[in-house]
Image (spheres, rainbow, N blue to C red):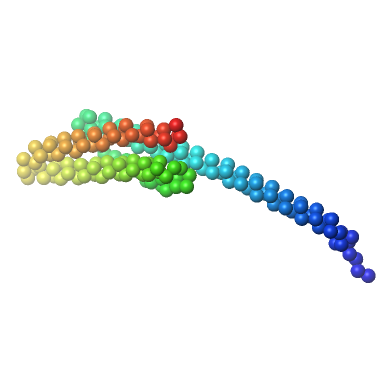
Length: 173
């Protein structure tokens, strides 16, 4: 004797099972979509917060460098653009493409300043090394230092003026 449950031959039970499975799948899809939206919001907020932190860090460095340059000194540090470059790549798909382009341009300017600082240090160091061989180099060293210093002050001022505006755009203000 073969045992078969009654529900195997009931179309009504299959119909309810099909409706239940369809309803369950629809609910699961909607919950997953909602979860993805929440994760996206969290990710956008994280990227914005970290971008602002990276911009603030470089703005602080720019202000310190300006203090050094105003005292006729030479900053002995570089700007930190690695995190900014990484976050710019992460921001693709989350932030406005024009905003990402502007953030990347800002990062490029920070890299440009770092290169200028490196060139300034190398030039000044060369002058210091060669000064004993040719006294005229001391005058040239002073002129080069002023030229580099004036150019860097101008570039740092642009960063100081542009960073708050860029931060406001990132915040969505």
